[in-house]
Image (cartoon, rainbow, N blue to C red; front, side):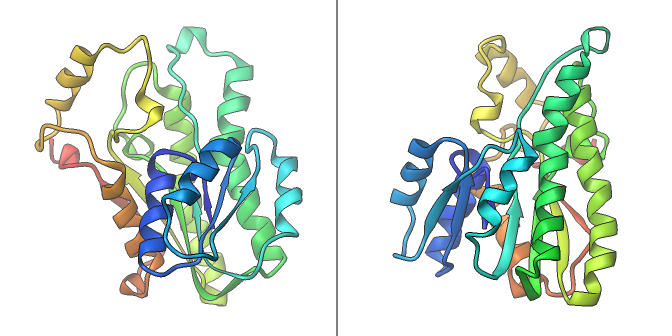
Length: 236
């Protein structure tokens, strides 16, 4: 099951998983985009469920519709740029609900209902921001992802007794709708890309392949890790 699969990294992960023979359940809040994702996937057993992660109570509506899972990708997320003097409590609540609270509560419910199979794998989409790659105005998003990168350590420890692995991918800037902001000019993006040794942002597929590694048996001895996929940004 992949959340936030109507676009970006989630969509790319769903498509690539289906190409490898997985039966995929995709979750998102935009039904038309979910249908568009399904149309690009291979196989006949994929399906979607509509759910808005801005309200954790919505999780109850999907839990009862789920089979037992071999893998979970907690990918749904939103961005928010606000300098510290202008941070509002409402902004904190909205971003943390989607990026942090709901993904954690989803894992809680799946664990409690025993919907994660033994030897299953859970992957959260965090960010290099959550590991200390700070940028001006990005405090709320950074904090929300930093919480996830810390949480997976505890989750990996607790769920190891059930054979369940928990990891996170921490992408650098990726070409997704999350960075499409009218206030950011193309020239600014090009300048920012110069910070990366590879002089570009990631394609969503490149993050998806990292997620697939963590889902697969190729990473059977990997748990509690934050896998950085940032085009070499961390070497500076």
